[in-house]
Amino acid sequence: MESRIVFAGFGGQGVMAMGQLITYAGMIEDKNVSWLPSYGPEMRGGTANCAVVVSDEPVGSPVVVEATSAVVMNRPSLDKFENEILPEGKLFINSSLIEQKATRKDIDVYYIPVNDIAKDLGNDKVANMVMLGAYLEATKIVKVESVLEAFTKVFGESKAKLLPINKKALEKGAEAVKSQL
Image (cartoon, rainbow, N blue to C red; front, side, top):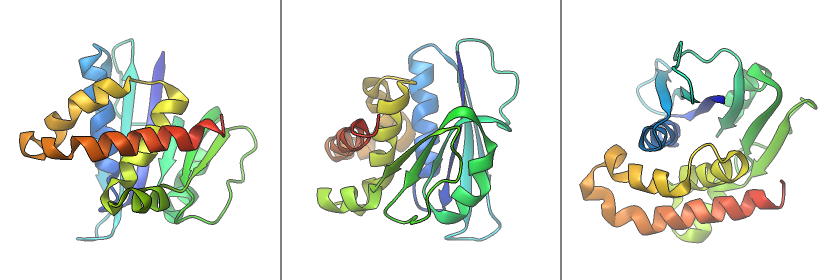
């Protein structure tokens, strides 16, 4: 099994962190992984995306041209990556910021109001973790426990105190996508 994922949005939305968490969780589970970041030319608020490959076999290239799924946190990312998903792939849309609906009928599309859910949790910064929870629930690519174990590897031991709110955000994301599965 090989999953090729694009996580995309504006800088500051946590798309790189989502990709890194999946990558580290994959390593924890003895999978072959790659993570390839890409940034726009702007200093802040520019475009940001990363390509992640998680596979049972060695990864031939970190470049994702045909994605099995895409996670888009803003409208420009939807416009750019919707057509790069393989038929029968999955598209996760941040419906808090993106009003447009997907145009493809040959993929599974999930609309998750991640900013609204994060706000309800009392921390706008966990919107990416809400989306990651939805993604994990729908794909089962890695275990939530592995992502939580990877958390301090990505963010450092000093951020371990943030694990409870991030775990809650993952759970809320999973709940949000269940009704759409």
